[in-house]
Length: 328
Ligand SMILES: [Zn+2]
Image (cartoon, rainbow, N blue to C red; front, side, top):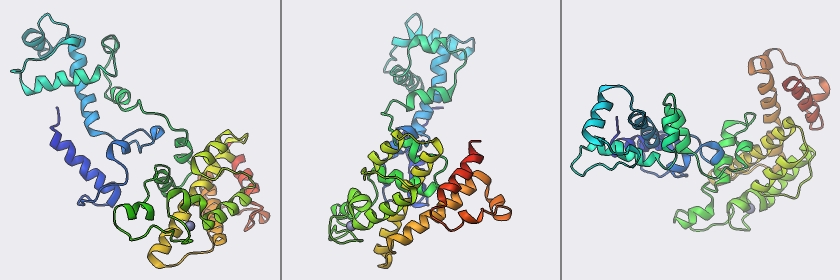
């Protein structure tokens, strides 16, 4: 069934409000356009279902049945009444034809951009998922997506870093442009405009956090912006596990810097960078151990060797220990 535009627009509004505001009733816009949220993760979206496109893919089954002349009453009737001896792929309906038939012809014309007549006819069985996959991709693949959506990362860290990568977090620079705040000064240092690049990398506070995390990880890099830091990690000759740990730390630092900024905004307080780094370390020791062993095992049975407990220097030992279990 072809959904009327009003239906999928209303469903999209409910989904959008739920994603950004946790409730179906809201008039505030989202931070990312819904069309971009529905892009696949590797192309910078969240991979949510684009209802309109899914409906087109589902209706594509009618197009496929007509193209392959399936033996059923409806297909025979369509060929007899509408198409007659014309070529289905180039067929155009008359103005006086029914709304439903014209809509099927529109679906066919839309599908022509993604699939050829020969490819459609060659399909032994029509798959809505396959058709949707063909129609929903085609944007530029982004190198940072695998790092952000890695399975080792904590979901809330992924989400905040995804927004930071798209530069759609409500920084004061952005809030001032829409008239929410009277100034755009950084809430943490108060010496520069609070843009994404300043807040996460150029601010003295975030610089100290990155420096502490780099020392903790034992890495040396001069790449202090998200895109090039992820690219640098990707190109570095390290094991897959170590790269995952570095990606986790990048995401965690972004998340904690954003939390501290919000703490400064709402409570007028901010923790010293060293405390933030310790928090990242603690979260990761728990996360890495949980990932490899499962929380129940961690809580009840795991006792880390004494040399690994509470020691920053012991982190790599812990990682090696866990990596031995992950990639034996
Ligand atoms: Zn600052």
